[in-house]
Every structure is written in C-alpha cells, then in structure tokens.
Amino acid sequence: MTNNTKKIITSGEKNRGQTLKLKGKRVVSPSFRPPMKKVDGQNQHKPTQDSDLIYGRYPVLSALESQRLLNRIWITSRLRYDPRFHSLILQAKDNGTIIDEVEPKRLDQITEGGNHQGVAAQIAPYAYIELHELIENSKSVTNPVIVAADGITDPHNLGAIIRTAEAIGAQGLIIPQRRASGITSTVMKVAAGALEHFQVARVVNLHRALEELKAAGFWIYGTACEGSEPINTVDFNGAIVLVVGSEGEGLSLLTQRCCDVLVSIPLQGKTPSLNASVAAGMALYEIYRRRWEKNTLHFDKLQKTTWKNNSNRV
View 1 (cartoon, rainbow, N blue to C red):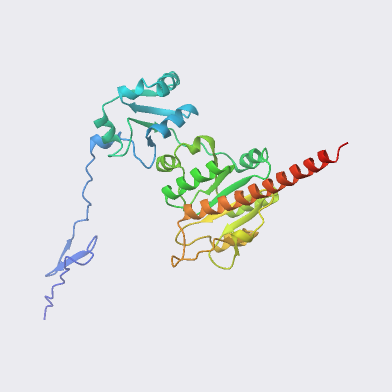
View 2: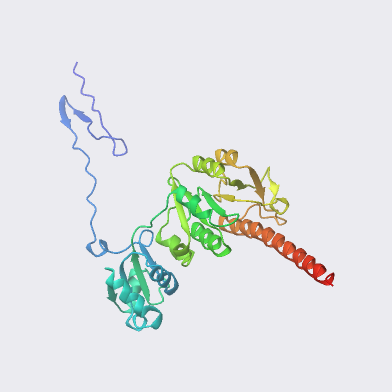
C-alpha cells in the first residue's frame, strides 16, 4: 500500500532551505529574502546629534574661541555679524570651515527642534589625549584631581560630570573605550563649553590605567553606596583620582579592588541612590571644600603669627 501522507509546514515554522514533500514529488521552497530598505536621500548628509553636531551660542562660541576644528557652521545673518561672532567666523572660514548663512527654520530642521539660538556647527571628531600626557600635564598643579568614569553610558551624565569637574578645578577625565559613552555632540552640548578647557583620555583598560596612576603617585578614591567610609570623614591629601560608577550598577568589583579607599555620600532620605553626575559633583565639591578649609585655616594661623611677631617688635 502506497503511503500518500503529506508533510505540511505551517507559516509559523521555519522553512528557509527546507523541502516540501507532496505525493512523492520534491519541491524546494524558495529562499527567504528580506525586503530592501529604502534610502531617504534627504537624510544622507544630515548631521546627527549623537555624532558631530553642536548648537547654541555658548557651545559654538567656546569651540570657535579655542580654535576647535569645525567642518561647517550654520548661522543666521543677524548672529553672523554679532561682534562676538564676526571675527571668529572669519577666522574659522580662513581655516577651511564652510559658513552657511541660513534662516532659523533651517536650523530648526538641522537640530530637530533644539534650542539652537541661531547657530549650529558640525565638529570634527574629538581629539583624546594619551593617559601619560594627562598625568604629565596634571603634575603642573599642586595636588591635582582627575576624574575616572566607570561605565557611564548616558552622554547627558558624562557631559554634566565634565562641566562640574572643569568648573571646580579638576585637571581631566579618564573614560574606557568599551561599554561607555565617548565624547559625542550631546556630551559637548551638556558640557556647555567645558571641553574646550578640559582634557579627556580614553583608555583600553580602565583598571590598568588606575594602576598606572597609582604608580605615578595618585591615590584612588571610588564612590560606593555600601561598605565604604563617609566622604565627610575622609582626608583628601595629595594627588587624587575620583572614580565614579554608573547609575544602575555603580563601580564594578574589579574597579573597587583597584581603589585605595571607597567613599560614600551619607543620605538621610528614602531615596537609596543619586544620579551619577550629581554624586560626582557632590564628591568633587567635598574634596575641594576640605582643601579650601585647610588653606583658610593655614592662612588665618599665618596671619595671627605675623600679627603676634609684629606686636612684639620694639
């Protein structure tokens, strides 16, 4: 008796490259071909916010003043001849930057509705420095402070950390190459011009970099929620590296092992943790506050000694 059983493959089963048997005949199913993606020609040359676009008067002005390499500038006619911009625009043009005088609506399109304030710029890729250069440059300052970001993936957090660190007086930042945000246009926008005066080193291995900093005489302080010393009880002396972890996971265990001291910010409320950039700002302020306090006490003591010596003169 002939077996006429049919083998049927439903639409929900995987059938790519499989054969269908139907009454002794062999039929090869066609190979699956994904649909072709359409390319929108209008978006091919549009700068992307996450890679090479900065906008707003202060970020662009800071980039111009520091002679940052810019590929193109879009600016309104009113702002182009503003005394703050005019000479810098001419200088950028002499250096090869393309200057486009546009209407505000065009800037709205380029920045996707961002607060451009009449100007936007397409920047060249950020130029990181080597770790040994950052260490060498920081030695020009007494008791330097360097910030290291362990796994900060949010560019807004990274930009805020850079802005605070530069404003308070830190010498630079270290970020890892993998599983972390690099210096994008979003970071530059949030940093509000701080990157034009602040050095960033990007390293392959953060843990190896921390060991190199130890060998150079730096003490490594890591921020952690548990099992650490309250930051207000720590005496921050000498050259310092402050390591800040990501919001979700904090410092990795390997990074914690690389730290000389783990410090925590005492919290009195019910919220268990802080935003990474907020925690970095609070820790940096505490470091510098204690230093300012010591300098003030030393200055007061010096004044009193000088006054006493003068009063004893005949």
